[in-house]
Amino acid sequence: MAIHQLTRGKTKVGPLTATSLDLATPLASADLNETLVQYAEVSLTSAQVKALRATPATLVAAPGAGKVIEFLGAFLFLDYGSNGFTETADNLGIYYAGETVGVSTVIEMTGFIDQTADTLIEAYPTTAAAKTKTATENKALTLKNAGDGEIAGNAANDNVLRVKVAYRVHATGW
Image (cartoon, rainbow, N blue to C red; front, side):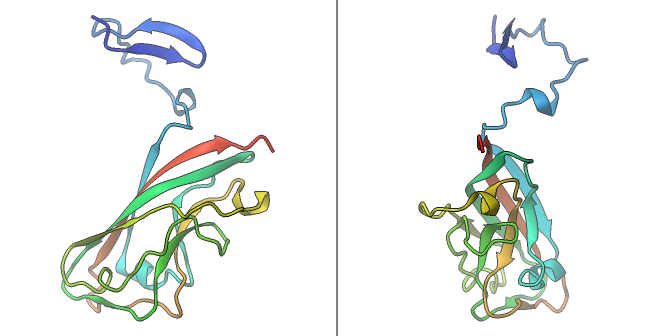
């Protein structure tokens, strides 16, 4: 009984069956279609969260020349330790590395990062805004603090921020 059709590149390999599955020859990353939805997960220590304004965190590595990352969304999970962060106007955003125009909506920190319990917030793609080739091609996706100062608090340094990102990679044709 066929489970689904297996293809490698443009060559049809045939139906995948429990008896024809070759586990000795796993598929390589190059065999996968990079335009499919992919996921990345990054865990940030308390010290990294506190330094996001000065040192943005890479969420998805640069895809290579002639390619651009499409940000689809993210979940941010605050894994609360023993004492909370404090913040004023220190909102986060997801950006192409080194750029000032975000690919995500503003990630409001009030009511999220300052909580004293495990908490979740979502980040969504921004609406269409033109971005240049130099601002997007072969650029990593980063999480940065676009506010007026660094996030503080969590003296015990035991809070963790986990970011799970959904994205696709596209060849630009440039």
